[in-house]
Every structure is written in C-alpha cells, then in structure tokens.
Image 1 (spheres, rainbow, N blue to C red):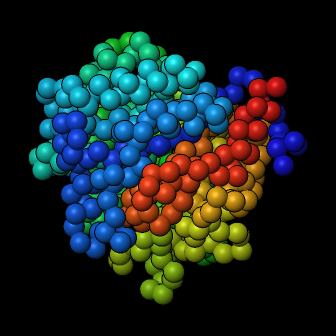
Image 2: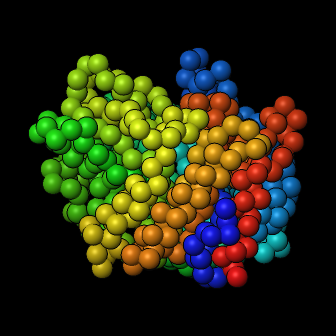
Image 3: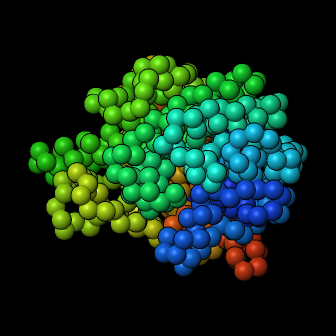
Length: 449
C-alpha cells in the first residue's frame, strides 16, 4: 500500500512520540519522586484493573533497546517527555543528578543513532509535592515550571533541536480537574478554568526560559479536532460551539492571537492582559495532536455520553459528546475519519491566517490489538493521505510523529489499549515489531526518495 502513498518530500520530518509515565517505569528508582499519576493509580477504582506505570515498558532500563528499534524504523526524530518528578522530585530547587543523568544518556544514545531528540517538558505527570501545594490551580506553578524549563535548557539546549513545553493542556484541565477521570482526580467543573490559564502562563514562561537558555525551535503539543453538532437545532449548535471553544480555541487563541475567546477572559485569574502578553510569546511551530472528531449535542439525559478516551462524563454539563456512528472504529471506540484531519488543519489556517506558525503533527495513531495489525496500517494510510491533502492545500506542515512507538500504560485504561508500532509483553518486556512497524518504515524510506 505504500507504493502509491503521496510523496512528502525529503525534508519532511518523520518520528514517533511517547511520554515518560507511560513507558519509563522505575517509578521509585534513581531518586525519582512521586507524581500525581503514582498517587492516582494507588487509589482503588481509578485505573482499569488497578494498573500502574510503576514498571510500564521499563524504558528506564531498556532505552538503548528502544533507540535501536527506532533506528531500525528509520525515524529521524523521537518525541519523548521529561519526567519533572525525576529531575526535580519536589518540583523545585535542587536537580536530581541521577534523574537528569538518565536523560543525558538517552539524548546521547539518540544522537549516536542519528535520531534527533524532541522532548516535551510536561506530559501530565505533575510532581505530587506541587499538587499538594495547589497544583495547577495556583499561579506560582508557572514560576516553578519556568525554573524547571531553565534547568533543562542549560543541560540540553546544545544537543536538542526541537522542544515542546506542555502536552495537551485541555486534557489535564478537563479530565484531571474538571471531571476527575485522570490524575489528580478533581471534579471542579467550570471551576477548573484557572488550570487552563496557569498551564498557558507556564507555557509562555517556559518558552521564554528555554529561549533565554539557548533552545532553538520551540512549540507545544496541543490536542485538536473538529466538533460537529448533533443536529441543525439551535440547542445542539450552541452546545457544540461551547464544546468547540473549550477543547480547541480556549488554548490555541491565547497562544496564537493573544486573546481568549469571547467571555472567557473574565473567568480567568488575573492579571489576564499582562499574562496574555507572556502566553502569546511567539513560537517557532505549533504542534497538533489529532485523533478523531467529536459529535456534540445539547443535554438530553439519555445520550451515549463519553469523553474522548471512552470514560463516562458526569451529568449536569451544558453539552453532551455523542457517539459518532457510521464510521469504522479503533479498539478504543474512536471513529476513524481521515477527512476530519484535513478539516482541523484547514480550520487552523482559516482561523489564524498569517499568525499561524509552521505546524507539526505531534501525535496521531490508533489502538489496534495484535501484531498483524492491518487495521492500524489502514488507519495510518488514510490519515497520512488526509495530511498530504492539507499540505497540498497550502498548509505548512513540517513533520509527523506517530503515536506511539511501544504499547504502553494508557492512563485510566491501564494496559487494555495497544497504540504501539511495537508489541510489548508486559510480563517479559519482550518487544516485537508489528506489521505496521514495517509499513511505517517503508513510508519513511519512500519519502526520502
């Protein structure tokens, strides 16, 4: 199927993405402190089958094997995340030499393999002492995060060509603080809006700290997808518009326009105007994570109401995400709609115009069980064609990072979902490349001519 795949050109960046808590394991080794996900996993009923990331893929000990797999795959870039708890166990102050030493070894191993490291500073795993002090509800977390960014820039700016500050701030805001389905498990509803603002402020402060420390290309990885109203009724249209604003534009507008969507600035802790000047610090690129569109209607009381990762949402919200039928589904129940990928990229171009920096697709992939994973190949084929359609339409996309290299700990879903190009036997830690691994390798080879 790769023979007729569109040509992305020799300069297009190909990679894979992972995150620290989902693969590293070694949760109590090397001076690492606890994160909110360690705490959340220890609470009964929070995670499917009481799974934890304590061992996960044991990447902390097996990183050289995993880098060798990436070299075999042929990617030129590896997007991973630093564990804040491994580098600063208390979330501030002294740097843990063993923890940062792990990332020294990982970065050097990648560079020796001809793979460029592209780290994300934060992928939801807040140090527990920071959460105990108020977490993302408190403004001073932006100061702590800027200090953390400065530490990383000082250590890695000479070796790392591509940086991301925060991964999917919408998920931490909504799933972690608004509905409580992810760590830290708070159920604040719309009272969680300060979490969004403080993440955005921390992002802006981190961009400034990274740049001051010599980091080159800086962006973030933000989750986006089209929101479609369930019907033409006014009620469904309004519910979908509110949901669209919350999950898409509440995060992208402040960064790219320096303003909040109408009505939201007043709900944020201030000084909002001064903060927006920091939040909108110019980026070198904007990273988009995309998986599926969302169908949304007005509250009905009897809809199949699910969050984006299949976790039920509580009643009382002014909108209902509905099940989108008529499309193939991944094992997670997410609809497979490649045209929605093109649509969200076109929407970004229309909404932001000349203010839109170059884009990277920092995550895209699907959960499919089995080593002979033809359904994943079909998914990736369709989504890469949709991406090329957007590029051919004039949208400046510089690279694509597949989610993910290894089957891993999938947050509240535990180990029930298989997103990896490489199968992991979590009893033995044996890695087995899947059919999609070979397919993606062939895509990369073809793109390079």
